[in-house]
Length: 114
Image: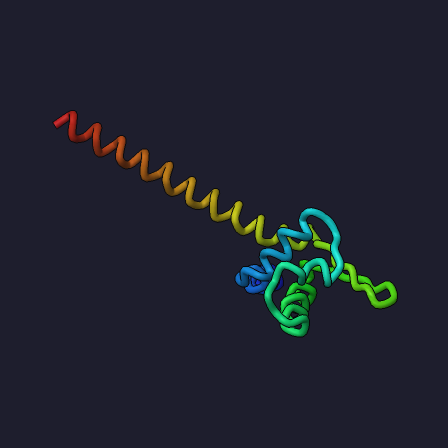
């Protein structure tokens, strides 16, 4: 469970930045080169590469180099930890709301019966 938490923390850290989220969103459409990925951002390449390093260290993005061109790919399976966490939270809160609805129905029934 601790490895799960560490992986989840790293994923949320990586996705906390809007630049990195935009890169992940773009890579969701398919692989792209570093120059293609950096084009929409108004920042120097070394600054952009820091973002890419965070994504690669997390495992959300992998890259391969052919000559001078580095191509990046989204590792969709790494997003499963975050997806699983959201599903757990959704189930937890859904259960809580169901319990609240039952309690409110009971209270309304008690009020009507008085």
